[in-house]
Image (cartoon, rainbow, N blue to C red; front, side, top):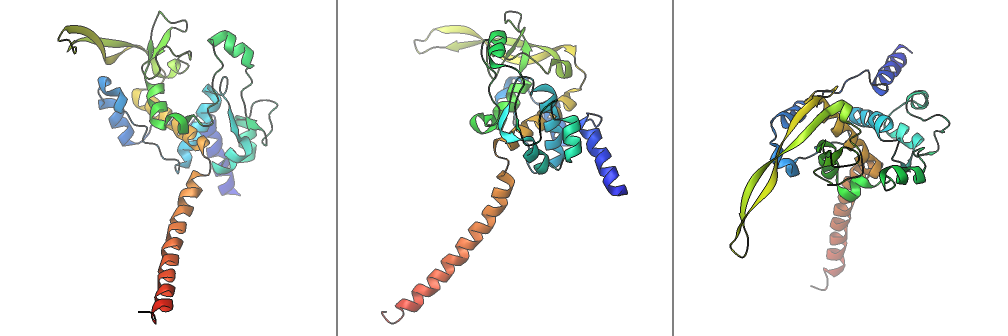
Length: 265
């Protein structure tokens, strides 16, 4: 009983945000030393077998994404079971008021209102990691910057002119994109001057440090990767046994073939 109480208290602290995710050393090193101009090479480096990361990602999604986006192919109960979240804590900290554990994870925002506010309906994110790739999602969440010409006041390097506002700016802070002039020679031999992205410059700090925000994004992307195929961990482990079975079956088939054809040769 004492162990169960301690486990429940840890889950409660985790889901309510009392535990701060500082990330591993690799994530911190990448976040602190990566050159801004090389943003297209940034990798999510997530692991869907990391249950703690998935739990934090579920918390992040419920707090910052669920207001606009749904996961229409994932049930709350299935998510709680896969992520080892007790049902009581699931209902207390993650389920929106009125939702039941057996229901699919759906936003409460009407599609008509979303289209009127943002110009388009926010997409369902169930298969976004499979469609775009987790590195794409990681780069998208890391490359918002200030753009006064946009209606939302923000733009994005990974998806220029995105309709999504920078909803994580309170965590990351506000930053502007700094460009440099680069001369390029065209096919006709003429030299033109173009602007290329160089780095980000922090304007207003956020509530999280660079390393903490990087860990926050990785946990969120990791959860979206899980949502794209909740059974992928089981599938991969089962695949090893399937391959071993096929190898053994092939060996037995070869022995049988040799037995049948021994008199012919």
